[in-house]
Length: 390
Image (tube, rainbow, N blue to C red; front, side, top):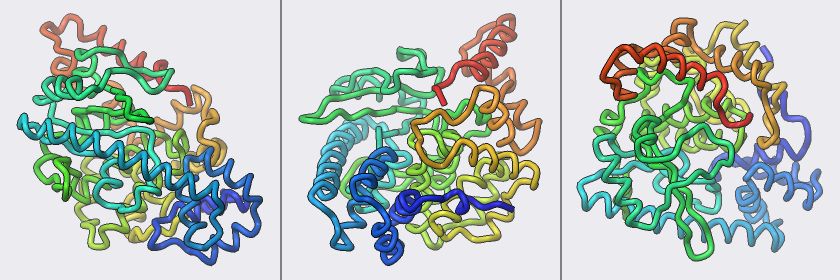
């Protein structure tokens, strides 16, 4: 069985991967050896392409090899992230005062509460979660805080407006800071992946029941098991290699290393109940093989798909490439085939494309069953044809 480590070819690729490992586990002698094989200017360009320049900068600084260019990148990112967190904390506090709890998801939650090195946490936006019953009020609080609805991606499948957000799972906003722009996603669905069956997605209310407080902030984060599940499914949502690409896999690495006593038994049970073993397996296997993330072998064995399915997905990732995330990774037919192969069974795939009539009525606010076929057809067409460019 081919492994993902075989896909690392050049010193630049190996260098980026070695630097992405969480700081306390980074192999500094290996990084020093790889850096000696790289041209510093080319490495900087390559690291910027993969949104990892500030992380590489900190590894070079530890080795005493960071030039002024590298050091300024790390300092600038730390400043930007801390400034953004001040704005996030003010929003979370305003929501809390209104009786609305808010969770910081994915990289935002990791950087705010788990991984205490802001220089090493580059990210494009903050994802936050509120209950659907609080969504409208949280939206108005965000507007009062200066957040303006808009889309960061030029090509998007989303529609504008509060009503659209109540259907799709959330809205995107921007706010201009002193010398920066913060993009924020306010969600009431934790995943909102179009290829993840909505009926098996973790219920938002369930996530809030075990959410953890963050010291010095009104924001919350997911408990360790749900946090790892959420980032695994988010990585799968990006097909493991689509933008922002390899950097996504640091989320798994940092959560796993932060919780050495993580309840893996519960993790596997929940993934099996959600029928998402295949999708989750690759979110774990890639950092386990590339970054030596300490994921128990029995967990990988329990989630590993059959060989034919594994080989198909591996070949698709190999062809798309682990690197250069802004490049097109799949043709439309290849993407649809890839997404279909991530399901544990044909039935799971079918349930995602065609959820239950009850879900459709609730989700789209249908008062009559007469329009149900039309909404099923529209949903299926959107799954096939409306997506961000890959």
